[in-house]
Image (tube, rainbow, N blue to C red; front, top):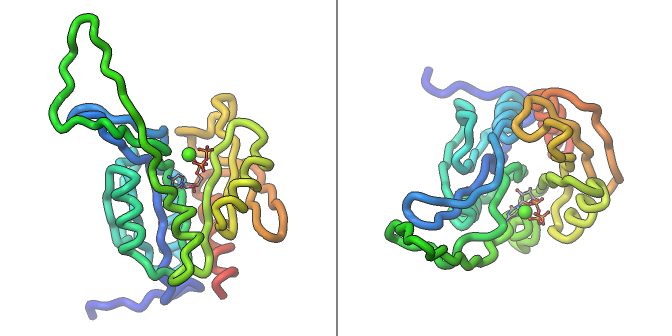
Length: 223
Ligand code: CTP
Ligand code: CA
């Protein structure tokens, strides 16, 4: 027997997950990036697999290894991530857990910028495409469920609610990533799920448990 039938509420469903940071090159040896271990996105992909989904996992250079059993697409930059995401469509649901760099260096150099006494390099930036907004606002082939994240340090719920409407996604998973919370780089998360139905505040729990509860919610929404 070579093919094993998957069981679970998401069997036969194709779900996309983005995870990790993106790296935006300055030159061949330097980059700018967001902080992201990839832990939450990886846990979500694993939880979706556990419910029987076929998972496309589009990941930037994360610290944690990708889960086994996903359709794995490794990317570096935001533009590569958008390309990989669009190539993965159509999907039933998409969860955008990646910490995408908002800007890339428009003056990126193909050769190493050499240090010169007294001369500082000047970087200029260009805005990266918003992958979540692009997918949320598709007229054809939009996933039935689009879930975004909002990592905030101030006015978490208000910022996240505005973000949900601005981008056009169905749910936003919002969290407070102020250094004092220890959430960035840690094993726990405290999230609020914002949807048409309002705000659902979950207590602080492991990123694995956040992932399992979110995957169950995805399964219910697609049922
Ligand atoms: N996101 C994305 N593409 C981008 C930026 C963000 O897909 N270029 C997604 C993230 O994966 C996340 C959501 O959008 O699911 C929110 O990201 P966030 O950085 O919080 O939103 P921004 O609109 O970039 O706002 P901010 O100014 O707070 O960074
Ligand atoms: Ca951003």
